Amino acid sequence: MKKIWLIPAVVLCALLSYTAFAPSRELSPRAQPPSFGAQSSVLAVHALDGGLALTPPMGWYPWNIFGEEPQNEKLIKEIVDALVSTGLKEAGYAFVGPDEGICFYRQADGRLTTNLERYPGGLRGLGDYIHQKGLKYALYTDAGTLTCSTAMPGTKDHEFEDMRQFAEWRADYIKIDWCNTEGQDIVKTYTTLHEAQHAAGRPVVHSLCSWGEGYPWQWAAAVGHLWRTTSDICGPGQADWSQAMKMAWANEKLSAFAGPGHWNDPDMMIAGMPGMSESQDRSFFSLWCMMAAPLIAGNDLRSMSKATIETLTNLEAIGVDQDPLGIQGKIVWTDGTISLWAGKPLFDGSRAILVFNQGRHPAQKRVAWSEIGVDAAAACYVRNVWTHETSGPLTGGVTVSVAPVDVAMLRVSAKNDFPLPPIIVADSYLVSLRATGATPQMLTGAITITNKGSAELPPWKVGDGLPAWLSVTVKKNGKIQTFINTISTAGLKKGLYHAVVRADNTELVSGKPMSALYYDVDLELTRDVSGKLR
Ligand code: GLA
Picture 1 (cartoon, rainbow, N blue to C red):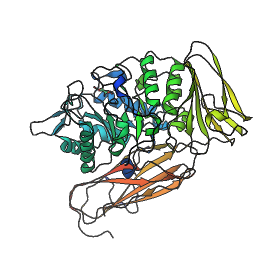
Picture 2: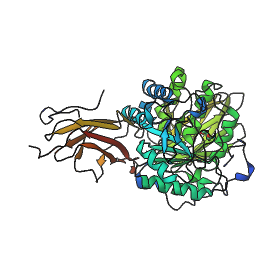
Picture 3: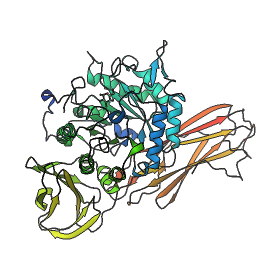
Picture 4: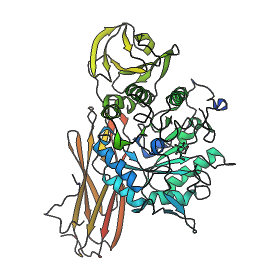
């Protein structure tokens, strides 16, 4: 449903690893984190200012399945449509856009310009398409002189103008790679890029991509929202299970460094890619959810099996990833074949645990409450996140059977109630209004925000600082909240007007802030409007 309505009474006219370094793509022993159990030494978490990415970003990026060559506007739009039609959007996946898809050139005057052969509607046009679908726009660049394939210019010595251009294209998420950066200081470079993003004035999720080089977990929370901890998880087109397991084990050791607004990123997902079985998909997805990893799908969404869709949209698993406490789970026991992942308390007082069997034979594992931080005498209910069954109350622990290369992912709680944290879905992130008259008008456009979780959310609070021509009210109807944007054209000159609306909310059970909600409002006036509204 379109989100722009007319209100006849008032509207005269509503046209209104710590691992590797990209070149070798190998695990590197020299990039060990200094102290696995240490608390994060990060002093400042800039992300909290903008309220962005307070839970791990969810979305889709092209690199894992496509690599560079087939990326173009048609492909990205098809993927955007598939995000909607397959239900992934309804499960919370939001950030989408081209990766190293030869999207732009640098002109002689130094400015970036869209590669119109591949993106004939322009990069701003692609952003509008994505926003109108209720999704968020992700773009890619590099901190060096050129991107990794050398097909696109990097931001070196153009940081401020490039981030301004990304803001003009209306990017909400920028992944910044670390190729062709010889001689550059990594902390200084990403700090400059962060300052450039701030100066550009558009709230943007900053995804650092140095594959663990420079130990970003030690410092990047002050300048970004997520950082790659590992080398690429696969070459384009084909999943690499053993590489993915190395990534998981490397990333697991960094759990102390992750939290709301600052995440370890073990790379885009391989679930649903060629080479993956159904149980590998489930295991992989469970590991990423237990690690509070960004859930950036990397498969071809236009041709997914029903099983892959069910895996990627399992809200009970996604709820573990998107938990408002933002704690990264870790391995608390392993015999080399079977591992027990825990250390992930959830917002409602329950705990997520994962038993992962990497062996070739079925396995049984007794999980004692004492192993997962629960009082040994406690009577607990156990929710199986994949079978959607609850058992209990059980005292002492639970015994689970796990098929080869499969998982048992559970929530353990004193209550027989397993609420889902809020999962936010928008019908649009863009309100576009146009007025042609010379007399004052009131125009109205609405966007609808739905909470797919089971936990209640109070009404969103709209931030201060809206321009005088715009006012926003929020109406709540259960899980659905409608933002009504009312525009008065009185006294405005002919031209284009733009505002970014911010709204904030708090998850009531945990008392934790929700990621801030941002959307764009565009107003076009084709004539000067004089006088006052009657
Ligand atoms: C690096 C990144 C990948 C992808 C490619 C594009 O390898 O790690 O995720 O963005 O560059 O060239």
